[in-house]
Image (cartoon, rainbow, N blue to C red; front, side):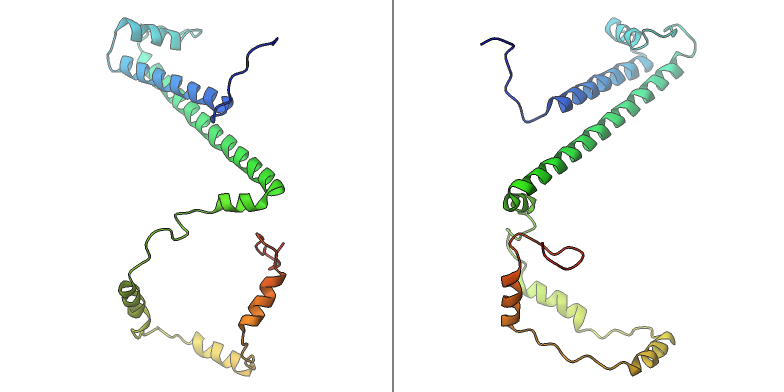
Length: 194
């Protein structure tokens, strides 16, 4: 077979690996620069510091080298933060793109992937006695609200409003409404499914 060999695609995309490698190298350089600033003058550390300032007019024998080191470290930290934000932004865009594509091809699978199993009550339920005690503590105790003069104004304004007839919803009404609804669709802001 002619041409170059193709590698197996891994779960981590190549762009993310490249950015993570840059972050790892920058963190290693920050460690070496910090070590040099705190007094470590080993040859490997000095060589790394010289390479970090290569192409600039900065010499390690300058009196303000500590300030230059601090500026370089801060610059690297800002680059790391920007690269991290880039990873988050790209990952979010990729996730949105995949969800949109899955929505167009297989909506049922998309909605299943969006479900969070830990929220769906997979674990044991709460103890009945604790639940009853919790709600009894909230609803059984009388509460004295501070009723201001605005309550009388609202009561007088709403006295002329005729009350609505009570609405009784039967299981047949619910079955009829659900029968017309589409599967795997939820109502939007307009209240209409689909």
